[in-house]
Image (tube, rainbow, N blue to C red; front, side, top):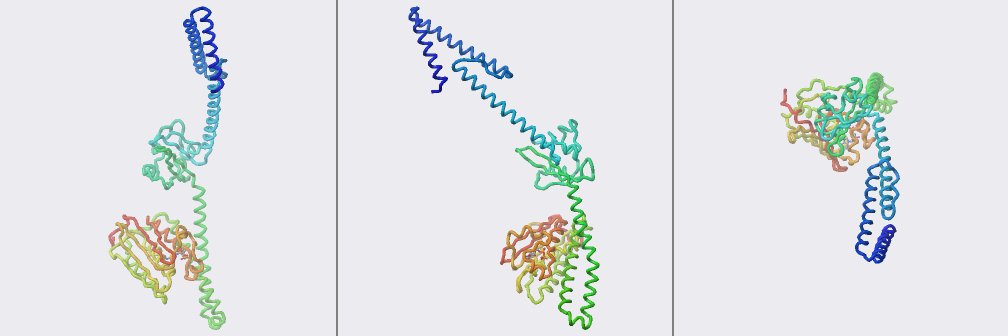
Length: 433
Ligand code: ADP
């Protein structure tokens, strides 16, 4: 039994004993005991009253003086209050800190009301980039303030995996990348980041690559021309035949890299497709297959076609030619002699699909996500030996991006690979239209 209770029991015992003695002296035990009980009850009621008064006057810090069990009750409540006050202070400090952090965030952050598009709160950056003003815009629908169709579609689409890029409503020159982040059930946070600097850097990179490749083209043509002349020149050809041959091969390789870099730059820089038309893919595949057979030469690859000749898609012929030929030539280059290659062009679940399947060396799973990066090669030696530039799959990726198509890669080391280009249903058109 805890101390205060023990004391209280002693107090009750003392009171009863005192009452008994007094009752015996006065000759009326029951009334005296009743009086004692009433007095004890009154004391409790008085303390309950003091407790209520003290709790009501919240500002009064120390509890009133009390004796017995009530001293303990007051002390316990007082300590609880102190602890709560301390927690409250800490919470308030933490809230203030969080508020300061969110206000200081460089990204525009807007909180929407639960299950709605109405704006609940925003930080300073949101005021700067989105032009929100307090109290004018508080409670407004965000789609009324950010009216760009791409953002409105994104907000209503409920697929927030990707971000959307729009110009800032305050300054057209600022590009914002906006993401909606759902949290806590039906709440949403809208975060906008200034991408202007990133875009400038990206454009600088693209321009640099485009300019360097363009500038390298002329000297390379001159070098290649002189090498041809030297190779044909009598005397010189005999003495330096091997060196000249090697120089010509390297010049050709550089030429191919420059051509591929320029094509990549074009694909990156051109935002819209130049006049998409119905592309006769079957005829294109025939031409690519002829070239692939030439490339295979003595290696005797068995190339089989499974092509729907009536299947055409809307797109840019030259770009699709680059993409499809890269995939077919890769199959030839990475499949040992006598290997089998199947080129398919058919509808699969209504979607036009171009695929190249080979029985070649295959690719380990961890390489697959990186294959479309520029100059990513699994076996650099083999890539170079077979005339690769390391840019083929990057070109494929960009061409497919521009046609809203997807590249799927299935491969197993030692068993072969299958590269599949899946075009959207809407790209399917009647040939000749
Ligand atoms: P490269 O010019 O080196 O072939 P690509 O971008 O076309 O560059 O391909 C990148 C890498 O992917 C290649 O170096 C090669 O290692 C691998 N690869 C591409 N196609 C195949 C294939 N059909 N089978 C096996 N590996 C392949």
